[in-house]
Image (tube, rainbow, N blue to C red; front, side, top):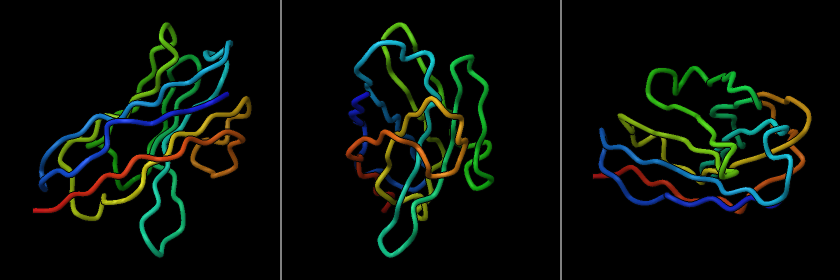
Length: 120
């Protein structure tokens, strides 16, 4: 599986962004998918995860603000980010695996990342 993220950028506090992750390969709908982020000097942390049936899990720090979704018809994962805060600034990565790692960074496949910067 190859993963390519897009949609990052510079946004003001309180603003919104939608990240996309395009996946290549077949049987996409059988993969567990997730979003992670990593800020400079910090460890990579799980943001949200989704299984093939659409069940989701979120990190506490994004609950109510971010929404993870997937469109199996076009092999794409999304992360809708609302009410962004400066502390959300990080490189965001999508990840995939046949094992449901949820928010653990044990996924076998990773994208190259897309930068999100929240600043006025």
